[in-house]
Image 1 (cartoon, rainbow, N blue to C red):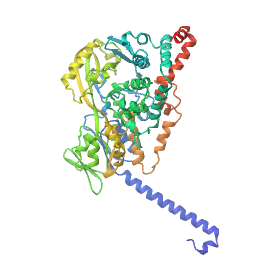
Image 2: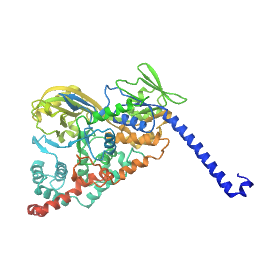
Image 3: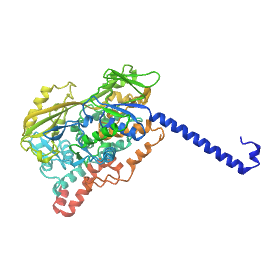
Image 4: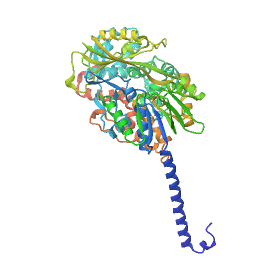
Length: 592
């Protein structure tokens, strides 16, 4: 290419090659810059102003996009994290998203970038036994629940629960005492055989094999089955089965149904992956409200971007030559890209040109009818969270399973006679699939509050949420998530939100970041590696509210192994410490 003259003059040849290389590099850089500018000038429409939609807009703006519009049909931003003011207090009427854990790395990072503190007081749970009419402290009750269930069905199979001496002792003694830990550890060691321990380990291996974001890849057929069928197909021992079901049932009040429901096992494992079993704190009363408002203000502060509330979308039309037209208030507005964060079964009907794939997938999604009622109640005990485990089961659908006391914005405004509470119920029968009427739900609410010793004075409001969108067992087996990922970006349409990862604020925000880094970062096509590295880094969250006793050596560890440690291995540490200082514990341990 350089010709013979350059061959005779090596120094001249090197200079010319260097000059040409610089010229090519400058030309390539200019082309890339022009392409980036073209991409960043695109008009992007986001449907939904919950944490998923707002974080999407935030990440897009961070990546250089300046024309980002977010549409929300509700009057305020926040989606399912919504709170309302009740007696001068911020009270929760959202669905299930009222707690936070150190494994919520994206949420904490997001809140820190906006200087909003989400982490409130440590989560304190009180359990109410409908048979004995007794309240029990829930700090250590989870382990007791596991062992009581094992005792009920193994060594004392034919003995009624109330006559079971071990169940009685565990329920009456505080698990903070050496005596109780000795009994629990003795029970654990004597009942769980090697097969049971291996079965439990298998569950956690499944969990660790799941991708950090989304459900891509080939899923084992057994994970697509219901929890009951999954445990049967994996040939779980009765003891291991009870341990796993007790762990999974603990999340029933958060909107994820009990193990007796038709929820595929895959989602229980995903929940374990993202939400460890311990270390939970309440979100501060106005935490999510402040964060969502801060994101809204930041988005509105960028020229060309905006968040529109009280603005439902009327129709969506994708153009053959690219771009999307949406109709709002009778006017058509053009966008280069559309991102849907709401439920597919709510948005697809708005598409005048929906494809067969979109229609098919939208029909395969089911949700939980999660009912939250605000009420002023007198006479209840002072505990902030009251769980009613017997109301998690299918035959008790409609009954109150969780009562949450108002978290005050101003403690001096507290009226001790009439407290404000959030009351949680499921609005659809597990067994029949029929929706329970508002009147019936109200009757059950009044009945259950009376059972707790309280009196409902005023009903301040109620919200029925279509919560936890997920595909059915049959849809999972037919490759629901693979099909959904395959149509990402087709006809300028993308999908995000809780359906793609899981119904948790952390999971939703993670997927928003994942989508931006994989589909919208033209100049950094492999930036996702930094996100994966975060989950494997040795750094830890350092919020002052986190307990120093959590002893988590890494963020990834807190996601994937905390469950196994806190459910089983931590018993060994606890017992060894207490046996060193208590001869009684050793005697009980040996005798048992």
